[in-house]
Image 1 (cartoon, rainbow, N blue to C red):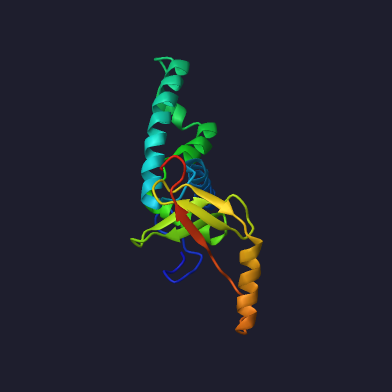
Image 2: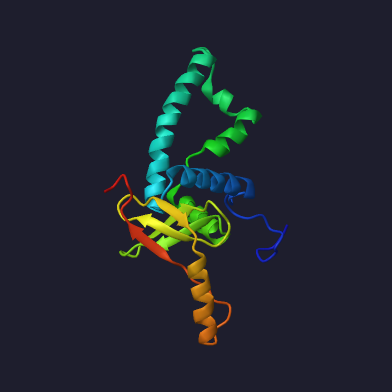
Length: 180
């Protein structure tokens, strides 16, 4: 029997499997892309919960009609084919939403910013290259903008003062057409 300090010892509890973590991260990434603008983890979590609640009611009604009243739903849930769908369609917790958003921002799949109140918000990144954002202060919708003039000015300003490996982020805010 392995000792308590043996690294081969079985972990206590059920750690999150990579497959489940990837499925949850993909779920959060899809929700972030569907949302469109910048959103906090809390707002995205509520949005996913509300959206999934509507979908679950529709899906449950369709499934019940297909099954018929004489089938046991618990038996169907244990079938191997359904197991993968249960992982993908399982509601994502708030803590998983936070972790997934942080991971998406860390790998460059999402933009993140802090609001004036200090709240961190996220947005699905449309392009992997360097860009700047024009963001609506009211609804959070963001448009990626590119400017060669800004890029040239940044390089020139850095060189003039002896800086190398210059990084910059420019965020323009205003009101979009819908929020005027």
